Structures are given as structure tokens and as C-alpha cells.
Image 1 (spheres, rainbow, N blue to C red):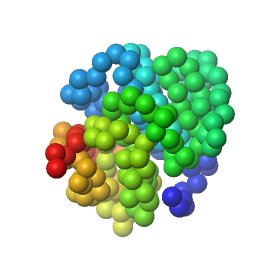
Image 2: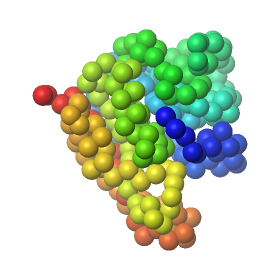
Image 3: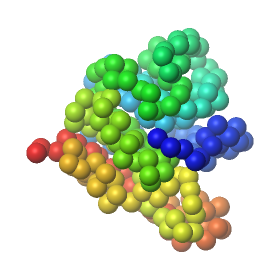
Length: 221
């Protein structure tokens, strides 16, 4: 994928915009829908240093993530007070600890054998980090590395991108649906207006910021 966003610089900021600092409420609310079993693997693409990684591990799941920024990954382990070992792969470096493996490097270098047995893709801030011209490549790579029909929990944003350019980018529900057809069918779990929660975004002129949680399941074709 081509890339114009400098993600390495993004993660050296004092307050990276993608980092929530708490467990995502949609994850807590909707994870039971997927009926996962202890030990099941959950994949978090473009995971940053999300505290969701630790929380999922504490629930008994195996978490596999991929993240371009070495700063983000090492910050996650430091802030979580977890030891790790580093294992060099062909094009990625795996940071490994019990229940958690985070691959540092380009998402497009992920391989299917890194995700053997994956039962859920959890996209909290991945699709909205991908520029529009890269989203098809991102989706095709996803289909290449996870088993066909692996369900997804995806959180997206919809706002006027003529006012704010992103990232995070505006990816309306309709675009997510179009992107993942025909392999997946989409269920809207919840939508919430978030502009009051983001005063800095209102200050630059945004009048609406719609956040939506989506459930993607295999489309029976």
C-alpha cells in the first residue's frame, strides 16, 4: 500500500489521537455476540498501543496484533508492565509474551500462518487509519491472511472530510459495506454521535462525528 501519513511521527506525540486509554465500550458490550472460547485468537490490525490488547488477554484470549510503530508497541508493553521477547521474522519483528504477540512492521507483510486459528478480527481504529486509495488493498490482504468468513467487530467514523482531512479518516457504514461485499454481510450494532466528546474537532468546524460499531459475518452466497 502507498502511504502518505507519517505514523512514526504520530506515535512520538505526547497524546496520539488514536489512543483511547481505556477499554473500548463497544468491545466490552458486543464481544459476547461472537461466542468465543478461552484460548481463541483475536487479530487486531494496526493495533497501536491499545489497552484492549491487555484486556482481551486478561479475558483468556490469544491476541495477535500488527503495528508499524516500534514506539507504540514498546509503549504498550512498558505501560502494561509486561515482559516480552523479540523474534525476528522475514519482514516483521514479533514482540511475544504469554497470550500476546504483536508484530512490528508493515501490515502488508503479515502472513496467514501468523494467524492460525484466528476466530475474530477486531478493527477498532484500523479501517479509519487507511487512506481511501489503500482500502481495497487492505481488505484483500485481510482476506488473504484470515480464514474465509472469519467474523469481525469493526468501529468506524463518519464526518465531513471537507472540514477535517484525517486521520482518522471518514469511512461511512455504506463504504464499509461496499468494501467487504460479497464476502461479508454487515449488521449495524450501534451508532453514536460523538462530536460533544471531541471538543477540539468541533472547534475546527465539525458539526457531527458519527461513530458506528459493525458486526461482519460470512455472507452466504
